[in-house]
Image (cartoon, rainbow, N blue to C red; front, top):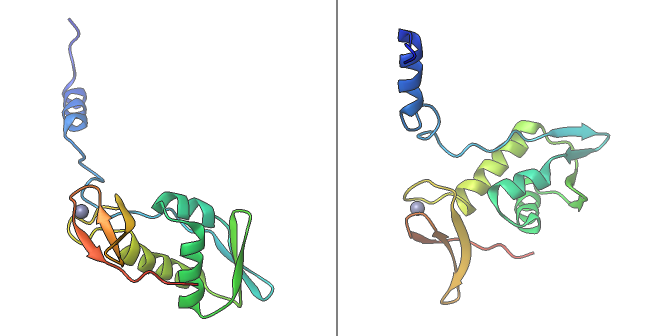
Length: 139
Ligand SMILES: [Zn+2]
């Protein structure tokens, strides 16, 4: 029979504890890669972020253009905005989008989807079943 050192036992005990580090923290969005090129702002990993938050690129793009008050386009996996916007500004808008269209107000989980109920767009949580109305922006 193998003998364990105290550190090893401690290590094993800690590993068995459920989610000691991250489970309680809020939904973490991957780091946005944003840079300025001439007079435009490139959101380089736009598709990665949309995939991660499980929303259509078109919907996220419309939100960003509206909030940033500019024009832009989706090109392959990137979003390109007219004008120069610092990374922090884009991050702030993505966070706003997530708060409004992704996170459940009740349990704070991102396991939600947008659906229509009696002519009203709602955000339904797949984790706890909570429903809240949202503003579905039109193009
Ligand atoms: Zn919920």
